[in-house]
Amino acid sequence: MPPKEPQVPQEVLAPQARPVSGIKVVAYASIVAVVLLAFLGGLAVGRKSSPTSDCGSLRQGALDSIKESDQMDPGPEKQFQTRVVLHVIADNPACFDASMVATARAELDQLSSEAAKEAAREARACSEDWSRVC
Image 1 (tube, one colour):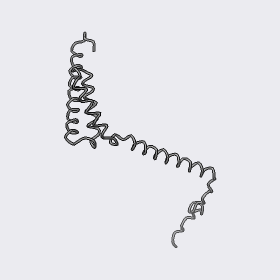
Image 2 (cartoon, one colour):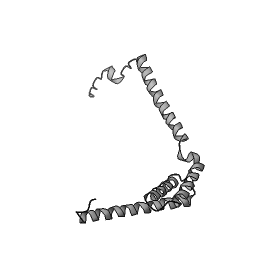
Image 3 (cartoon, rainbow, N blue to C red):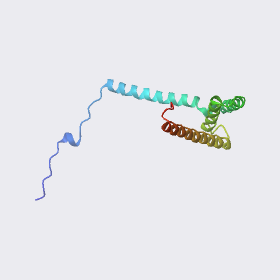
Image 4 (cartoon, rainbow, N blue to C red):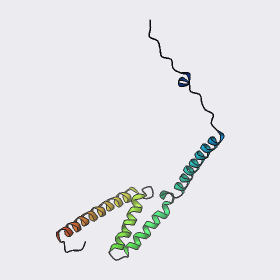
């Protein structure tokens, strides 16, 4: 005699769907609509304010900043201005030719490396000379 299969209640095999109330449908639809609108609004704002949307003004601004920094005395302000221009070029490769972007990235890497070396020298000097205020 073959083994008898266990009896499984019909509710487990085919659960009955509970009717969804109209309030829940409206609530879910409202949530979906808000999320969709927020997503589409974000896309529209992102495209409108994208850095590559106005390459002409970026190029002109970089050129003006370079001319301005050429007239500055060497110091922190000139270094800051230079870093800003390099970041504008490196962060917007669609607006500048490849050689400018590569040069800007190389310069930023070199400046970062020099800053790290200077910070290490400063930390070493502070650890060796406890009378020094660091």
